[in-house]
Length: 204
Image 1 (tube, rainbow, N blue to C red):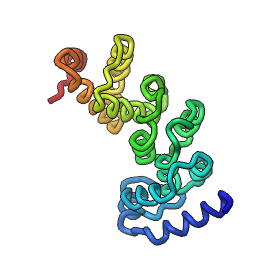
Image 2 (image 1 turned 90 degrees about the horizontal axis):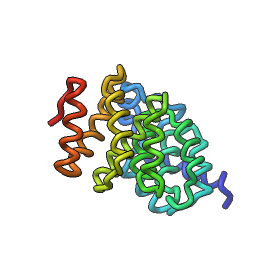
Image 3 (image 1 turned 90 degrees about the vertical axis):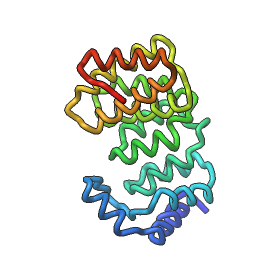
């Protein structure tokens, strides 16, 4: 079976997963996709497990302007084959916060260059790219990945700017990352507390 036939078959399977309530809820939250079956994440994960890791299929699925195709692409892309330039292209083509979060969770946090990429994305002028960077770092901090001194300085500097953004979702993503950073050790907690206090913020 060629890739286009596989994609047709996969799209047919989405019809069986269709959940109108989920799709409607997303539309109400402003998540407006070209096509959205409202398939739940556990159902998509089952489909991904059934397919297995497949680079060519992931690349083809990502090109489809369909919510489920893009999420599935992040689930089946083999970590070791995902090149940094492809990750950058995917990030540029990411249409919604949901896709950014799913990509960070399913794929980006597992890439060998995840931290370097995340710090680079924090410096982006695009809010969605920054958000994705914070989601990756949140996951890495949860895995107890401790940044070096330069990484700490970059993270704190960018996070303080993000915390003062007019974009509420970006502020939340930055704060979540700071909270996870603070959980690394008492030293990290002191650094985080001192930094957010300097702009009149606090965290629990």
